[in-house]
Length: 141
Image (cartoon, rainbow, N blue to C red; front, side):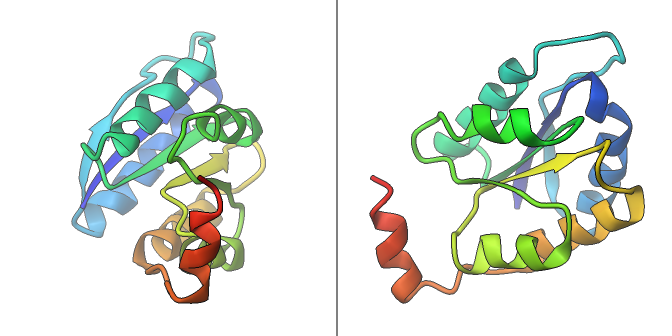
């Protein structure tokens, strides 16, 4: 699966960990930046990743900032994006299984590296359940 990933300066270190997990799982990565610890504007990276997912160039996206809140707010402004802010495995699993989340948001200053890695693994390996949940997703339009 092709996965777009992006971060701001607060998520730079965690992005490298997440990329390692994605590679370990056999996914192709489209890194949209940032690539520096200098302050940047997170909405630019949220938009870049979200548009790749919306346009079908990537199947999923992962966004990382200090808390994950800003990235999730910015990503969810893009029609067709269902970004979920998750900091543990249960929410990650439910966001995929029940909500068909196509973008995962993480807060690098909120979640530790080990928990982040397990959260990404869970999110990437959980399928959408469909059924009654599909009807609810259709209500987003």
